[in-house]
Image (cartoon, rainbow, N blue to C red):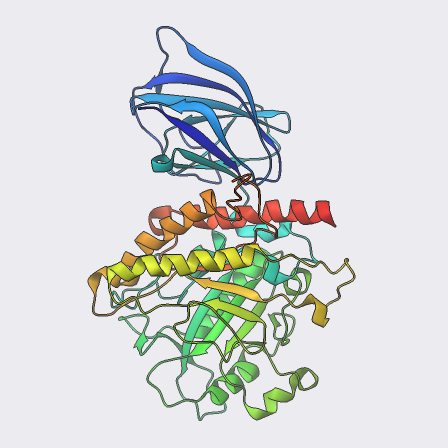
Length: 467
């Protein structure tokens, strides 16, 4: 039985569906979206009697439209022709979950991708941007907490390790090149009592992140700086927490970081407040999940050092740090596979909270450091683990949660469900906050990251229009 296609426009421009053609598919060769080259289209066999319809269906930015276009059985392919800013693009469905739209003009001004959720007869269209330098498209006066930011949990835990310890499929450098801008880092000082030893071992809980030898924070920081040197428009938020089996203290960790790593303010942003993007470009922004040594509490005129996350609630579905700078969803004790649905629900609720916020730009009479500019980071961990349950190891949980959140962003994010108009956008800037993932980029699947990054382009358009 044919179903009707719903199209959602997650771009900053109106999209018009101009034409649909039906074909018989004779192969299903395709591959995932790639920034450098368009996806190969499904091979098509023209019907004996061409079946096409010239139509005009307009879908505004951030809007959804249930069309009267029918999706037929699996042996039929629907070719859509869409127009954006006077330029036409082609798309064949059904498709794998993401693909590029094929431009029908030479040197198009913009590129777009589509995610097809076959089980919902739903197509979402969002912009393609260069993931290594996507922040260059955002205004300097954007509060960093207003940016939709892809992140990773235990970001360097990509090595051969216990399956409950490994959290990532690719290296931190690959994560950065593919759009990730938040790193969650856990360290243990190797010799905390030494004033000259700066070695911080990267850990996950009580375990090292590699079974083949210790990995160190110094090397990770060098990787991040190398990336920022190549892409000075970008910033990387780094949350640092003390874990491991050593006998160090938070105060010792804070001293090591201050003396040996984050003292250079040209490379680190360590003020105890959320910066605007222009202040943070080319730098690591420090969120500290540790208590400061007493002397460091006098930094920045007695305000402290680093964005304060030291009162981070443990295993919480939703909590705000006492500093007011961080609202976090970090429920991680998934005792069995049935609990994963609860985790997905908490993650969706945090996305909804972030989307309802309204961005305050510095040119709107709200200045850097002002109490009026207070907008916290909404940090949303999609991650969880249970050492004793194979189905609840990080990779297994990510395989369920990441697609579920991509589905939510495509079909439901910032939708009100208003009884009068189910597609009326909610009040707010649509930001996702910081979305922290495990196993992102596995098998070169960056769909979730691309979707989060693309939402920024819509938000910038909306805030510019309303300023």
